[in-house]
Image 1 (cartoon, rainbow, N blue to C red):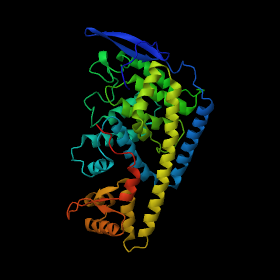
Image 2 (cartoon, helix red, strand yellow):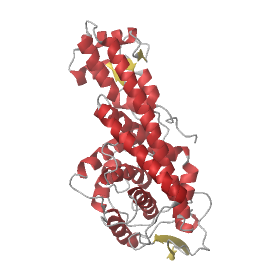
Image 3 (tube, rainbow, N blue to C red):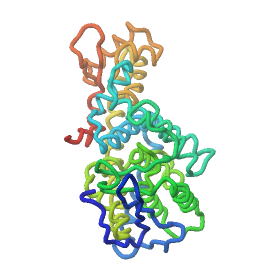
Image 4 (cartoon, rainbow, N blue to C red):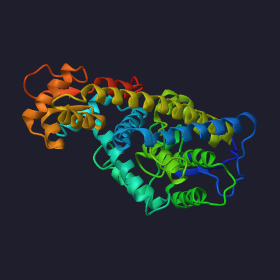
Amino acid sequence: MKGSIDLAWPSPSGELRSVPSSGETYHAFIPGSLVDAQPFTLQGADALLADEARGALARLDGLSPVIPDANLFITMYLRKEALLSAQIEGTQSSLSDVLLFEDDETADDLDAVDVTDYVAALRLGMERMQQLPLSTRLFNEIHARLLLNGRGRERQPGMIRTSQNWIGGTRPGNARFVPPPATDIAACLSDLERYLNNAESAELPLVRIARAHAQFETIHPYLDGNGRLGRLLITLSLISFGIIEAPLLYLSLYLKQHRDVYYELLQRTRTHGDWQAWIRFFLEGVRDTAKQAMRTAERIVKLIREDRLRITGHRSSATLHRLCDLLQSTPILSVPRASRLTGISHPTTMKGFETLTHLGLVRELTGRQRGRIFEYTAYLDLLREGTDPLPR
């Protein structure tokens, strides 16, 4: 979001309220009701774009049953999404950093902690959606887990803010954007809940998810972690609306690659009520991300199938298969951790990794004789796309 908010509005999508504070007056934006708003309908090229996005999602979701072990693949994909979402907000960790941190959780890497908390928060959200609708209660539970250990853990995790926050600047008076005052949050979230859970809505589900994401980011109901939680809720909404069954679609790579446009279009929904540009951007992201995820998944399925064939028939193939299965969810592994997770003895695990190295399936990272760490390089390379940290 570039530049300060334009006080010349008035915006068709909400109210710009003057709020006196500490000798100055700032302007907070209170979004209008989505429940009471005219349903947004797609026409022409936008309707075709929505069809393309739905088709790409259906094909991606249909791939899940043919992935050798979808849970292992999803575990790895979750880490990638968590990393990308954190990188949008400045995290400098790489995918390898996160995996190495998981292998040695005594390491001091706050960026990696943020990523592991995101993974845990998304898993919690998927579990709790079995009992709860998309709601403030669910948001609070996920937010509490999201900020449990990393950045923002001192900023009231799981609690709706009771003070004013802002985006950009040093105070609300010179901020780029000021969300609703704390006294308006309950009403804003209640409206968002009703919008998300309106079974009679005339809007397409993808349109509702796009508008709900923008509305959540505008409300900014927490002191920290709003962006990460808002992006996480996109995936949970896709599952809740029955658009996908497995969490295979994540938009953070697309949003990272188009970060400035992402922020600018969110702002235009506030200043100009420009929902069309935002929804078009969102649908393009869903379509392109689903297609890319499918290509990646197909390449991973092919790689795993070929690698399993290379070890089938080997005299220690049982051990090698167990290690390869583990490497699909944890593609950077130390020998002690691999031994602990598989229940295979340390010497047998070491021999197994040496065999996999000889076969060209893994490579050793440390160059040491003790404390050796191995990487499933070809698999990890397929997942590394777009995960280089953004420049500071």
